[in-house]
Picture 1 (cartoon, one colour):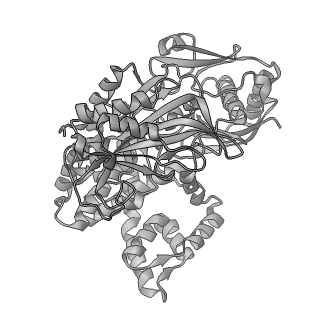
Picture 2 (picture 1 turned 180 degrees about the vertical axis):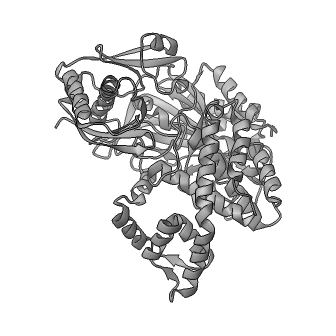
Picture 3 (picture 1 turned 90 degrees about the vertical axis):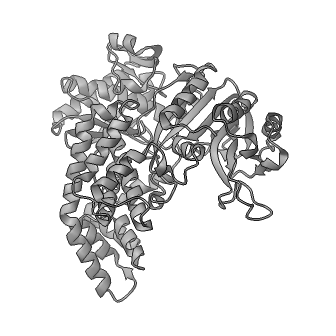
Length: 594
């Protein structure tokens, strides 16, 4: 197998697909646009959902990229050999162009010729079929033609080899997954890639979106078929180089060395020290990317800010285990900024913000952490049962800044349980906002591309333009979030809007709706869009060509869609709330068609 570093693997991937007619698109933001179902971009295909559902992509129908992703559903597992909250996903897509007949041979070629993985070390799984959809014999036959023997082709059910749909209905289909056989003996006669025994390590996944799931639960073959693939950068480097952990790759080695130097402890000296170093290395890397992102967030008490705060505070707590000096997190982040800056330039651009926010949160938490840990010790010494009450857990949060997850983690280490339901009740009563609502989003699907959300998406364009007019160009968009019922729009502004300003914005939007203006979409370069005065919040994400949506002489904005065909489709617009989102950022919630 080819021994390579992260920079070489990114280049090999992009060059391979360029040679096969793909456009290399830039990584999208970690903060999803107009998708209320998830807090972060969790996969390479996530930003491309509208195009997988039929929108035309301005860069064509063959695309590839390296996408930054964050997943925090397994945050408690971080510290083992493989789990990371931040990772890079290598991906390529066919939007109604090639299909499995081209994709499987390409997958085989990349694995065996480019990465030099011996054929005998490869195993694959394909969809076994069920009452809804047929067995994927086509993929199995293609793998046989490539030289994969029958005993290394495994037919597995939907839970293992199926993707989608993103919602209740829509595109979906079987996938074929590729694995490295580690050479370990089979755990049983039925040992397969579905096992967790460690014999098979997944390296790549090809999804073939060939079915449409109807509202009645039945499936039909689609005329417009897509391919979506994903290969994790960290895991692939680990496998190719024969490492026992992703923390041995070049992505983590410099940060791990710095943590060793700052703490005086050595990675590998004990399980406790190794776990602490891994958690710090992972959480600081994720925090640096979240703060430095073009839509950068800051620590807070809800949604993305809450997760960021949790990551930073968890890193601080594990830093204390290995005697990491105060303000070390920003030093570790600086290492990552230097390391990733040539790939993700926004880290260099936003370096001061990253270091400042990490320092502020670390100092803020450190000031109360020691006292809180003492209080925690008192709690478990004096309670008569093995369960910490919800009220006590909330007091640890309210007084000492302990997130509930930290209390649960500390309690588990000491053999105690926590009444999490009681905590949530106390939290809701005190703050009127429960963090539980944010956590539910991790279990959601992907963006809703219904007709209603398309109308609301168009309403955000009208709202943005109206705000810019009323507030004299000071109200640049900072983010948006759309459900089928309402829109939420964040914009930069340093004071509350007056009632008169709110009414003026609302009136301006309704004027455009009453005019029934066609919403016109054109494709052009970013430079052409700027020359026409189009608004584009995060130019670096778009690529060579973009879609520009024009609404008369009122609004011109770079966007991926989807949108209504005419402003009249919105019927009416009503602002229901204007409030603070964070320092220097205001938030408007609005509805249409009332």
